[in-house]
Amino acid sequence: MSILFLMSMFFLSFAPLWICILCIDVKSLIDGTNCPYTEWIGLGLIIFILFISVLITVKTLGKQQTSQNTEEYMVVTAEKDTVSTTAYLLSNALPLLAFDFTQWFDMIQFMIIFGFLAVLCLLHYRCDSNVCLELAGYRLYKCRLHNDFGDKEETAILIRRKQLNVNDEVVIRKLNDELYIGKYKVSEE
Image: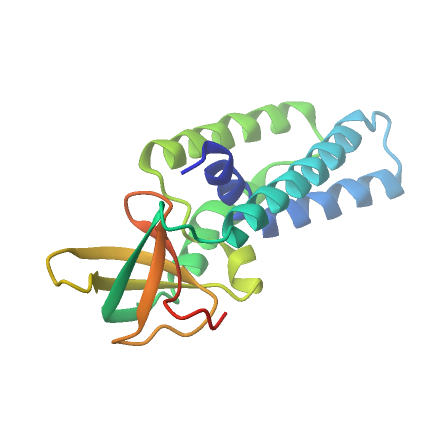
């Protein structure tokens, strides 16, 4: 999986936090501040990185599946993951609002903690909880898959736009060790 895609997914998973920070910075600029540089730099960076992250994510998820990077599987079990995004936001994004995003020192502290979270995400290849994906209609499924010959079985987290049911035949593209993008075997999407 592309490191850019992984970082884009990580950045987008904090979208509610970025929107809150944008509101805080805009309010600070409207109220008037003696040193507006922190707010302007924050606004510019967040908007730029959000734009780039959306482009990379849309490009990766919208990629046509080629026979080189895909495999066909039958869904043995499928369970929609409805908890991980909420838990992720409550445990990671919400506590970061404790920083004052109009002060340089707080911004430096925030960037240090956010940097550590990014490194942990890269080390564990985990960015599967993403509110932006859910808003775009993608759902996460924890599932077991087996190939047509029955000799290979995978336990995976599958990103799909449509409902996933047991016995569906899917073509999957691996993003990392656990995360896959899945489409119907017959092109219905």
